Length: 255
Image 1 (tube, one colour):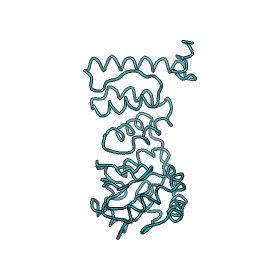
Image 2: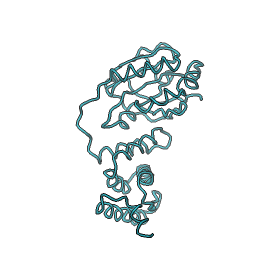
Image 3: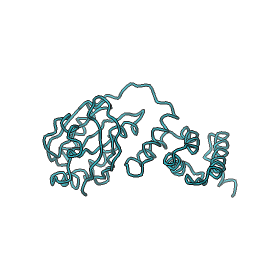
Image 4: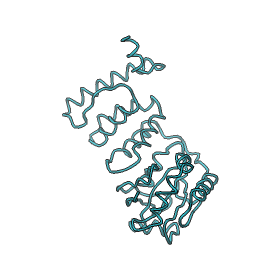
């Protein structure tokens, strides 16, 4: 599979500014569009971040994508890290920062962009797995204070909102991991003035709950208010029975 260019901004250490762009899907591994997206998704459970440098014209990059990154051992290890693809033609300053002189080239960094490990040139699965293991070994999670649930929820929704960016599945997984704590902030986001945020919040509620309630982010204000009221009522019922899954309870009542 040919990698698409991805907009990544890491030129100003230690923290990069997010830049929108296309996402690259290198095999089953979902490569995020920005370094900031990767940091948002990992959130309170930091992971090492793989920056995979490549170019659309690079034959060895395609071989790495089609063979090495589709290896079963690499795929099993991949969830332990966050992944970003960097096109060197789009972002030569990022390549320069990490000493990239040819592609393929990969580095593993922490949340501040500090390099932990690097791998120059094409590598087979065994060599690439050793590279991942080296980066994981050197990674030390930050001891930062946990982000408040509403803030974390908003960050994830904002990350998954653009339709042309990747990471949506990982955002949904992160929201699921938050459990019922994410439900109330998501319902609140149904009232957001931004269409993309309303749509992303509604999608998330449909994915992480079994409520199956309607919400049309494109609807008129009065229609959206009425639908959000249904979600608020469901939320009240859910809060009154914290040990029960609402859809399961409803199904039991109708038996």
